[in-house]
Image (cartoon, rainbow, N blue to C red; front, side, top):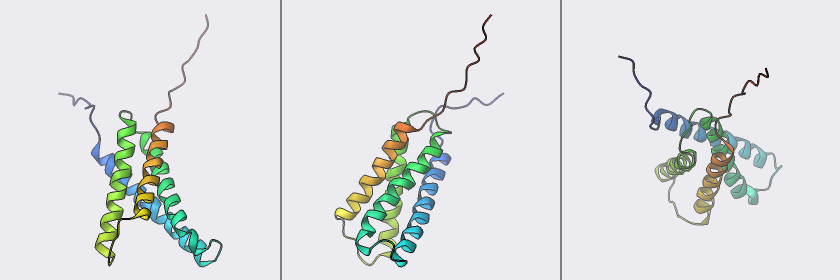
Length: 135
């Protein structure tokens, strides 16, 4: 009996998207550290760079993710952004000496949510070309 394709969420793809977001975020953090170490950007701009990294990583990874997933774009992107923020908070709790929930964490969450929102609005499947034969 052939297996019918289910119309639910592919959780493996969601997990891969969150891992992709974390990987992009770490890559952007490496670039940020290099920019600050080379004094191309001042240390006072580090929070802005962190928020920009979160925004771009969620946006880029979710745009790639949406090429494969076709239903529920907005909840999926915002859910992946929320899961990314949960991973970042868990790592901060595990390895940080103390975590104060303040404006910096709020800004990180807001920038991740905006990246997910923009990816949901811009992303999605491209429709194939229709052949137009004239007779």
